[in-house]
Image (tube, rainbow, N blue to C red; front, top):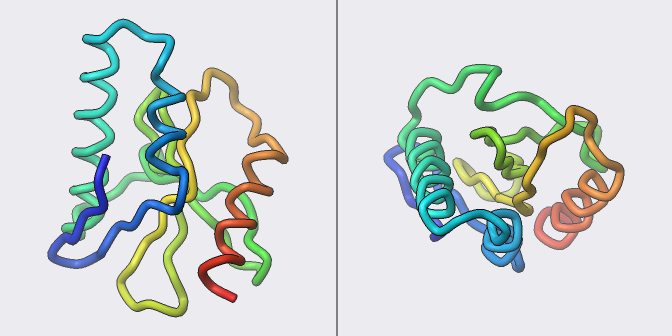
Length: 122
């Protein structure tokens, strides 16, 4: 997973985000890991290039400290938690990735996104 500079948005991984992706897919066979990486790379490129994003692939998730919301880049079963920077125009930050086989957003994921947001936005 790499940062991506698309025609509309720059997508930047926070510290530890790439490692969280590798951790999220680690228990799967190699062919599935390759598939998950290709799918997530494609959705990141679509977002970066200003492509249409459905609520299914890009749902609003939790609240950030400034009362705005972060979103998820969702390609089942992997999610990337992401927010649009208010300080750097046209830039999204990916906080971290998770393997998600449940519906509810965990407080630990909200906390992790908010902590990454504070490091960058405050």
